[in-house]
Length: 407
Image (tube, rainbow, N blue to C red; front, side, top):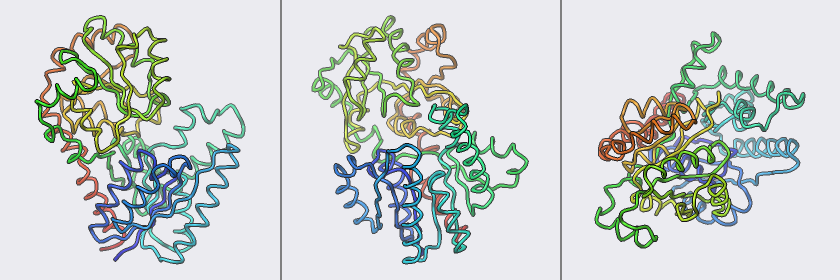
């Protein structure tokens, strides 16, 4: 049995850990690979959900080595975490003699490249995005500050090392792959594209009885004649909550029967405050959290969904997990074009693309809503199966693993 060390600076108790790490490794374990996961957990989430994750990994035959994420002081804490990661990875490699180090994003890739140079173990660079550019785009690294400029240059140099020395490279989007291959130094790279896939057996509207929708809406206090536009996931950050509320406000002016349902772990009071600031009545917003296993039941009553993501350079490398889950449920989306999102939506006729965040653009989109709501759920789900099926993602990783290890 071939052994793999999977290193991630994200936690398995984070939402993405549960949707974008564990399901893949469960599938690959069934194909004969033995995994050890080295992750960094946020203490509050670990104490709340660590037991459940331990049960899942144990049942799958996966060894889980959680370390705690450090927050302060800002820069020194990251240096400390990187030291802890390297120390533990070296210890685990001495113990298990891994055939492959699978590194999720840049911090983990530093350790993978280090181990490759020291031990010649195979190294997979799973990019997940242009991480250093994300830090600049989201304002965490102000390049006017000499310290952050130095850190940025350090990681862009590291990015080049990861790309040129990795035994395999995975990008989330064709857009990011094409951006890299434009550069002369990367023209000969072999880059595989695997988007953020979803478990489409779970996110499947066919699991629900259409006649039960009315009863569930009534249970939530939503009348049968109301339409629901959903927002799924974290609020703020990369997601343009204010712009989405402005769009929704214009939507209500023409179609007042809509209600907006936020399915999020975030504080409901903050969402409601921002909605109120945008001039949206509190009765037109619902905010609730649904555990992953029951989330599809809530999505099934929704008529459409919306997400706006800050259109920065780094976001061409992003693949929103929510897009895969919504399409699996046959739900059409209103969003802007980041990564491969616009290409997929236009190709599959599964939504509407907002090109500018202006009243005129919103009106153009809102005028198309009647036809938009009639988009075929079956065709949207079929497109999801073509682009975002978890089983296909697992199969692609399996091909990469076998190729790199030489099976």
